[in-house]
Length: 366
Image (cartoon, rainbow, N blue to C red; front, side, top):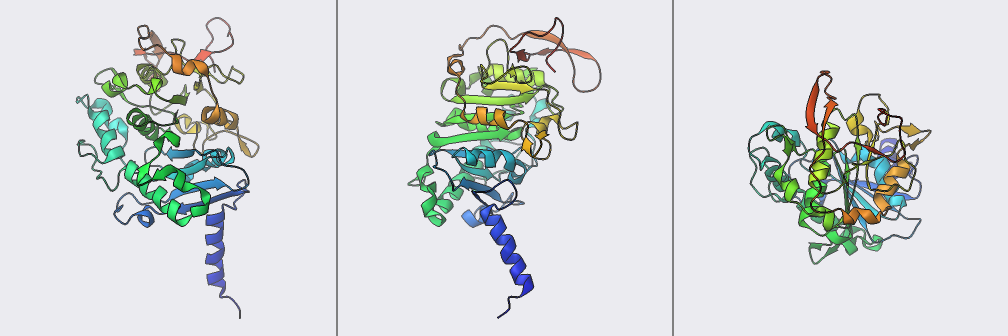
């Protein structure tokens, strides 16, 4: 009996979506799962599906990589990084979550708890923010728990049950990776829960223009002494000034006084997991997204140019990262040229971008 050609087409599409048979993903079992499949109570913010990936050709290391996208973005935009993580032996998921309100709305709000409250509501569903409305069923942590319970039941041979035990998530076996707004959520989760590692791309962005400094929650956070922290900033970030992002990292005790290491002038292994770059985005202008987003990150042939850096952030180890002193010297005050394009000089809190090899006098790392 002949198969209906239309039916056959949809069967083919389904197999590709499930097996990850697209170019460059050989051996990776990857598929998309709608949040409503994992729990019907998740009834909002479902424009896209969660991404799941696992390399079936190699042993797994017993760790879960959870990626949280930036504002107005979707997990499918980060598959280059997530597939790399799968090849390193991680179980991987890119989580859909309520990201339709940018954390930058808090920049000019006088309430010093704006960032804290917004993140708490998005992450845990606690009704404390007047900027977002996220209930307990639609928050990040419930979505992640529901997804893991679903995978443990539907894919029993793939080891997802390792990360969920009696309804309780083993966050200590998880690496939370975030971009932009997602970077802040990853750090926020790490501040409240034991996690294996947190990786921040182009973030945190919690720098108040009203208060002219990092949000209070970052000053009181303790993630630098409880987990491995890593990150990558772009020195020409057009969304949030690099100097402000560095100030937040300093508030979190994540960088030594010299600032993040500039990967453009340093060779691996780097002396820090807190890094920065001035690499040219694929479109020449989206610096904020170029650190990890598929469409904008620079390529070398068919591979991301930052692939070795991503791998280092995910699996690298630097002894000095955990030994950053609690009481750092006063933040370095520097007069720097604004990246806003207005061409004026302004005084900002900055920790700079530390080049690992000496540059000519007066020359910046570019």
